Each structure stands twice: as structure tokens, then as C-alpha cells.
Length: 315
Ligand SMILES: [Zn+2]
Image (cartoon, rainbow, N blue to C red; front, side, top):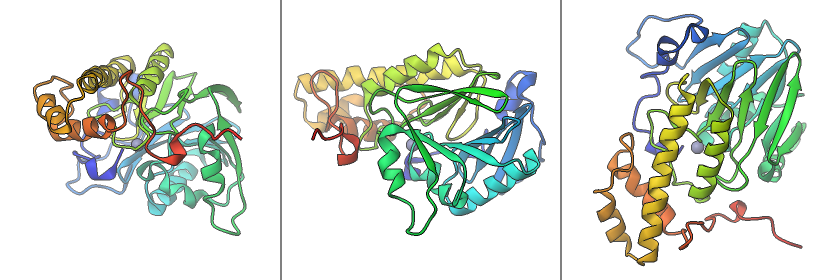
């Protein structure tokens, strides 16, 4: 999500997941309410699995028995360092052997540099492998990077995961989800946005692709969902449906306006009377609508807005 569009303090409802959820999602160490935002807070919803808010971003880790899988690395180097320290503390210094990046928005993964150099294998959307491989500072020892195309089964230590990606662009050009099979928890990045507006302002965001990956996420039968921000939730299916409903409504509305060749002012004007989702403030929906309207075609497909987001050039 774009940092500038955050509309609520991240701390607000973070621990509500554990309170509202089943006993399996109990809090590891409940903290008294503090008026100031803590730099991070951590919960352990089930054995060997933790998630925490570091800065504004949720990051997660799983002790597989043979090393740790980390999902997302935080927004800043400080967040990344705090995350590393918490991983070491909670797993008694097990090595981080795998890192999965749900996408490359800075608020989700600019903390990645704090993990370098690393012997961990990095999982990203296959389309991001080039960007990632060339993003390291000169002289940095390169980690092993695995680009996911479609989905893989990862058996790590005593644990099995599915890691998958959309068939094209969705929230961004580089989305990825991880699914912990034993607890049926899906780490969805910004693809599902409980209590928050799905953001379509990335130049490569694509409504049809996003709706497609949500349909796939729904088939996982997840019983826990960890998004990039705000509260993780056991109500995975309901939250997937809420995000999907918003995106479908937006797709229908914008396709209709495109067919009418409506000017942008009319699009935003008429959008105000549409019921697109009770969790999207009107101004954020207007930003979403215009961002996509400028790139959408009559059939509802969108032209990627960045050179990196398009299909690989044919040689
Ligand atoms: Zn994002």
C-alpha cells in the first residue's frame, strides 16, 4: 500500500485478531495498552508461528524445526533489525533459511537490506527476480533468489507451504502469497485488506488479475489471514470476499464508464453515488478509480503503467 494513503494508525486493532479468533490464535505476550505507538509488537497465534507489526507493516515467521521462514521484512532498516532480533529471540537463534517477499512496495520490504548478507533463499514473484538481483549494493554477497511462476510446494524442515503468485499483475506487478499448510494461514501481503481500502494506485495494478488471485486464495480454505497492515484475522474467506467485492464493483463501474468514453470528472462525480465498499473512504476510491481509469480498456484489462510491469519483451 502507498504509505501516504494510510488512513489509520497501524496499532489500532493489531492484536484484535488474537482476541476475536479461536484459541489457536491466542496472544503470546499481551501488553498493557500504551498511549504511544510501540516500534513493534509480536503475537504467537500457534506453536512455531509468529507475526508482528514492525513500524506499520506486519511481518511473520515460522520455525520449521530446521530453520526459519520469514515473510516480509518491514519498511525500514530499523524495522528489519527489530524483526531479525525478534526472530532470534523467539526461535532461540535458529537460522533464517528462507525469506518470502509478498511484493516490493517499500512499506513492505525496504527492510530487506537488514537481512544482508544472508544464506537464506529468497522467494519472489518470478517477474521481480531481475529487479531484486540488480538492487543489491555493489560488493554485497548475493543470496539465492527463486522466482515463483504460478505456485510451488515448499517442504522446509518439518513443515509444508505453498507459495504462489497471480498469473499477471494484481495489486502490483510482483505479488506473492505464502500459505502455511499445517495452520492453514495465508500471508496475503496487500492482496487482501481487512479494515482497509484495497489500493489500486500502483501504476501496474490490475483489477482482473487481482480478482483472479483472490479467487485462487479462496480455494485454499485458509483459516487465518495475515495482511500487510492492521489486524490479522481468522475470517479469511469473508475478508477475501470483501476485497473481491470492492474490486469487482470497481471493475464493473470503470468498464461501463470507459465504454461511454466518460470524462474523468464524470467518473469521479458518479463514483460518489456508487456503493463500492463500506471500508473505502470516498477520496481513496476516487484515487483508485482514476488511477485505473487512465489505463483501462473496454474489456476491463489494463495497460501496465510502468515499463517493468509489462510482459517480458520478446527477443
Ligand atoms: Zn502494497
